[in-house]
Length: 273
Image (cartoon, rainbow, N blue to C red):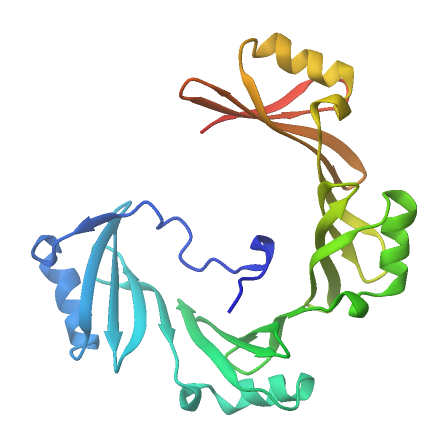
């Protein structure tokens, strides 16, 4: 199944990407015993260490699971793949109130403390659907991939009037806590653009890829003065909350710099990568 736009993907185990692999023999007994007590039938067990917490990937009944335990063996987070038969009836009923017929492609359960969420994915006519629901079946978030013809005309007209005709590569409808947004990405005059627009056809966020010649002279001069000798790898315009900023990716030898500047050339943020 294709992934939704990065902004839509819920990252449950955030911060574990750089965890260190460790042998089970190096896991403290209190942590290992807590795991084995709860998951005595686990297979394919692999351990990682991240900022003092222990992350364990494993399988139960051929379904993937993941835990985060602290150094005392307390389970902090638990993620597991589900069989369709394990999805609560209340969750399925809520989904059916939106989509009458579907075949589940993937289902997951996420637990953190007393907070339990379910994520259900499926595909209809080549388009992805994603539901996030709580343990009682209350809808938390709904994402649906759209055909170009399903994007409301007022949103298409808004973009065309202000920015030009958008050749849509991807369109997604999302609803969260009653708020509707449309995520669109594609090209305008051969330049990459992405938009977030609310249900009232009001701009929330816009990013546009820029040629060097399209960067305002004041901004370009500020970049070249502060980082003389750096290669400009990418330049983008960003609109959010009525404010415009310019972002740059620069490189010199092994140095990679990420800049954010205001329209008057003031450097707002600098990050090294």
